[in-house]
Amino acid sequence: MTKVITSGKTVEDAVNQGLADLGVSRDKVEIQVLEQPSKGFLGLFGVKAAKVEVKLLPEPEVEIQPIKSATPEPESNGLLEGAAVQNPYEEAAAFLKEVAAGMGLDVQVDIKKQRDGHIFNISGEDLGMIIGRRGQTLDALQYLTNIVANRYSENFVRIVLDAENFRQRRRKTLEDLAERLAGQAIRTGKEVVLEPMPPLERKVIHAKLQNHSQVKTLSKGEEPNRRVVITLK
Image 1 (cartoon, rainbow, N blue to C red):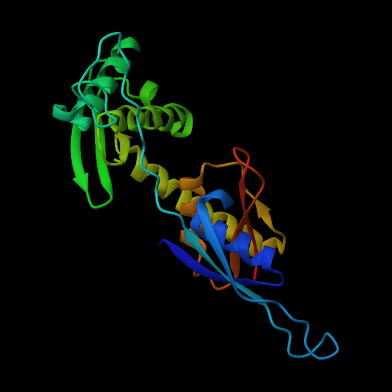
Image 2 (image 1 turned 90 degrees about the vertical axis):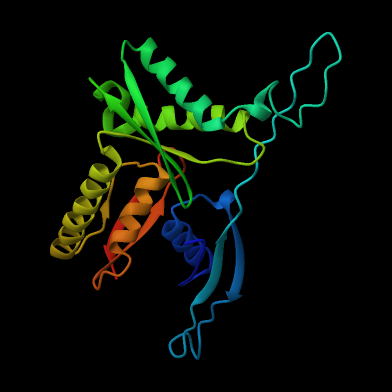
């Protein structure tokens, strides 16, 4: 999903709902106001909601400056020396193994290509150290791995790290949590505020409840403390 059209009492409400649906912050999107809100006759009849289109901005390409040395060298097209003949995914996998070795772990990395990027499945013993609390260590390693891979690639590449099928298990946990807290919101009639989550995990919650008949979701707060809120429609 690269764009959504949302509505709200105000333009800001509509924009916030769009950001929540996409699970991103305002600086990652382009916003177009489709309809301004109006109160209608005597502020009671013919009330018209604001409507906006929130569209994801394209991923920026990573530009790496060539390393300068004391003696003139041939043009490197913005890549590290020798990177033109090196595979960015193999370099990223080697980086992961080196980091794991520093943690006292011997791991293997299985690389699988998907439509929107590559998945690195990490296997080995004691992978709890690689995953960390709620996947925080895995997310940090994923961020660094993407930086390393893009140093050796002319085009932007995207890598997702997984270990012991953590991503799928975490998604199932979040979906179950979404259903349980939606039920709580319905029973109590009060909104439920979740703990801060990274954008990808918030997106799982929004997606799970986007077609729910009784509740809706939105995000509030600033990164890294942005939270999902579940409230009655």
